[in-house]
Image: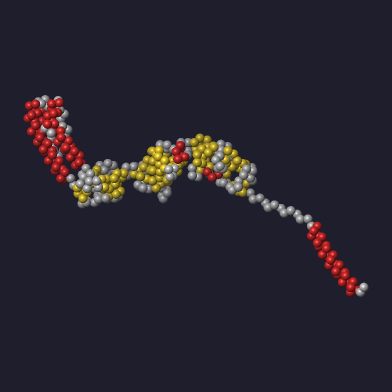
Length: 370
């Protein structure tokens, strides 16, 4: 064998050996298992439980309404005449002030004519009264002496006997008396007097306008006191009652108004499942039609704590943190609102979750967020 052939054989053997050795090393190598990824410990927020007597709050949206609001309608025909008060929207008036005057000259003259005729009828009857009813004559004579057609008609003397009563009827005295009293009442309707201190919120007529009976003239409201109307959920009804304190906040200015719950309706709105509530408020800065944010403060609920509603699991479970581990326990939900709940059964000093965490379970390791 030549030297060249020997070198070729040794080269092939060397390559084959290297391939064999590398395959053996790959096949004999033991793979070590991959280490599990570290478990992330969740940060949680907590609150320390401290049982106490808590005053429940019921939130609601409220609308301000003037407690006294009157629509004015004409009961007589005539011309709206200018007076001491300018009947325009926004103008304020005092109690007892005449806010609307309708021309009553014709009605007043007709009333004076009726009174004059009535006086004449009584005067012509005096001779018969003196003759047939001498005991009543002084009373009728005094009635005639004090008669003043410019003043309200005085009440007729009462008949002293059945015979005298028949006499009054035969002379048509009672009939004319009541006709005059009706005319006096109608004359009063030509002037509308304010029954309270307030303001004009709607003026439908101006001086010089012709007013017809039944026509709406405007609207007035009292500016002394307001009523608040709102709605609460049906489940809150058992916690509120008339007399509870009410705090109302103007969301624009932050100004606070205080009052008392005056009425709770029995009527349930089927669409919203709410019941109307009303509160009386006497405060400056209120205007008819304003929107306010209200809170009703009810009687104290004993031995409970307030938690976020979304941390309650199901209907009766809460999570607490003990030694960096989640535990759960049963509680009694006394009352819920939109965001908060009052619960009982929590030991004093327990560290409760104040915010929910995802995929929570008893025994889960957590870290309290500082």
